[in-house]
Image (cartoon, rainbow, N blue to C red; front, side, top):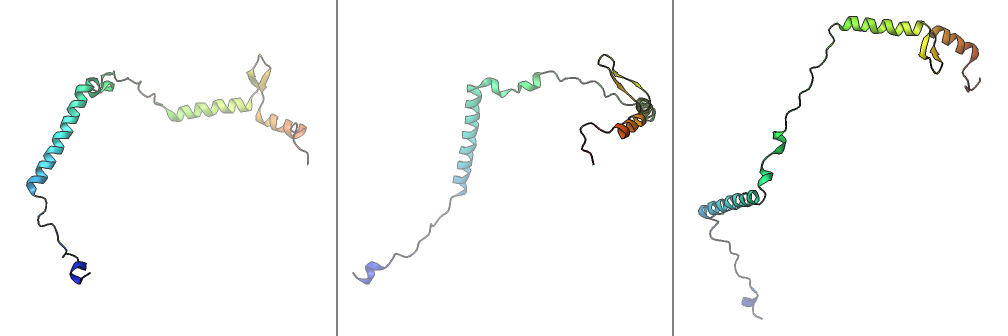
Length: 120
């Protein structure tokens, strides 16, 4: 083979790029295709275009109940808790469950111990 047959042709490049007119037409065609697709979808499924959630009534919630006197509410709560801790009373009278003052309960546990508690 001769040397002329082994030579590659000189590198070439495209002489012209995509014109503005072609790009504008392609973009316009894409927009038209999208609009046509949306139109066909709306024609085929007419009820899916409306949001049915907007037709439901909006629920009304009651206004928040705020504490009018929070310091007095806290004082009343603490009085009730101390009353329960310092006095004897029934928890469930039908089943025979009562509560005793916490000091008495601590003395009883110190004297009798806790059942099933490991000894030292």
